[in-house]
Each structure stands twice: as C-alpha cells, then as structure tokens.
Length: 116
Image (cartoon, rainbow, N blue to C red; front, side, top):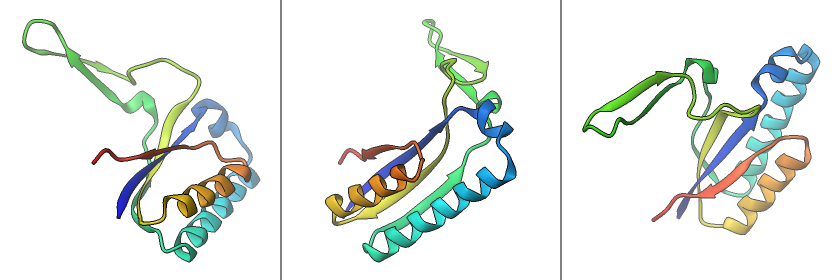
C-alpha cells in the first residue's frame, strides 16, 4: 500500500464569491469522488478543507539560529491550497483514473505520492 496526497488549489477570493449553486455542485463532485474511491478500494485516511491562507503562519530560518515568523502564506499567488485528501491505495493506476474523473468535473487537483 502506498499513500497519496491530493492537494486542492483554488483562487480563494473567487471561490468565496461563487453562488451557492456552485458550492453545491462542488459538494456533489466531492461526493462522487468519495464513491469512486470506495469503488476502487482506495482508503481515505484524512480529508479536510483548510482555513483561509490569510490565517496561515509562515516560518523560515532567520539565518541566526532562530525562526522568522510571519502571518500569511509563504507565497502571494492567486491560488492557494484550500484542502486536501490523504489516501491509501494499492492500485495507483485506478486511483489516478479516479482523480482524473474528479478533475474532469471541474476540480483542480495536484496528485502526489508520499515518499517512502
């Protein structure tokens, strides 16, 4: 079994402005993704939305043995990671196909295998 991380990037400001019907469409898409995962024998270890990136705390080495702590994400960009799935599967090809179907419904995702 291998573990995979499916990251969900989205333009936070635009997403917040979408009508309720678009949010409901997204929830149905996630529901279908859960059904696809279950049908393929893939296990959801954890899934969650994230708080807005403006509430993130970034930490970097300060070059003097300490850490520089700042409010907000590491990078300023139109898209931020807004959620994730941590999955476990023994069939990467089938999992990738389920992710492709999820993306084809209008979802933006980044599919990554965890290093072993």
